[in-house]
Image 1 (cartoon, rainbow, N blue to C red):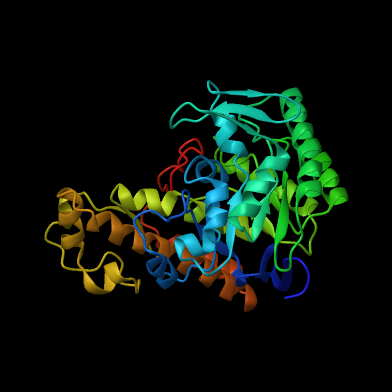
Image 2: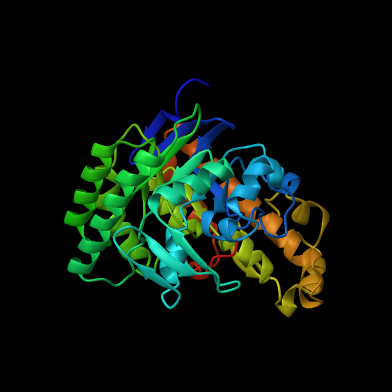
Length: 384
């Protein structure tokens, strides 16, 4: 393709949108859920297994990959796509959140952050320029600006100071980014839950100009109601013709609510971490596969699912594997959970294209036996 990464908006249904993200490594229909591959792998999954779920785009983590195996090494080995056998698009986060969460191991200044590795204590320096350089070595289709994720709760004064630092870093990230056909840089809106600060951030980012825009600083403990309230005024501030990415979200209910408010892109560790801890997301709600009631159940985890775990195995077998701590159990549950999240976003997209989003969202939610899925993991938990 000629020119930077681009986005085609195909349909609207209320606030919900269906579109296509055009990248150097292929097109991605939206809304899209991106499985998290923190260290160059979606945990417990081969690349072929991830592809089989319908996933079209995955996320990698700048902080973890810069520490090992090292960004320059990944570049010499042909980039992250080649290294992890993933032929589709990759988005890399900037490393900013992980660094900021290491409160006892880092020192921040106006230029960037100096921090100690959580692995071996070695000292490192991240600036907007270095973060962009690392993501270039990784060959990310979508590069994220280096920013500070404002903690919650924060006073308006704290949120303003943090947001304005991120906007200065956004301008430096834009300057450092090397344009290539099919690649793009996303700006990150900050401002905590304060409408005036979100507006100021959106104006600053729009003036700089990016290929896409993320909503940062949410899913950090504010709760779903406050997140939705913030999205209600934050999302319309961002350019209509560009993709919108809600970072680190979330549960199926979070995704449906955010899509209704105009968000196009999502990532979260929930499906992978839940798979490793024995939880399955299904059309009927969340199931704990450790429970003894599954021990004699010959039915599939989810009769409506076509993944390998559901088509070939029973709840009884999955429960046995989980209780016996056999690695196949987490692998099959991870496979199932990622497939469920891909099916969910595909259903929402189809409904938007057919102008029936509200009815589809209501039908999905009505079937959940559990109305309060597990709380999303803290973003400090940075493995996938």
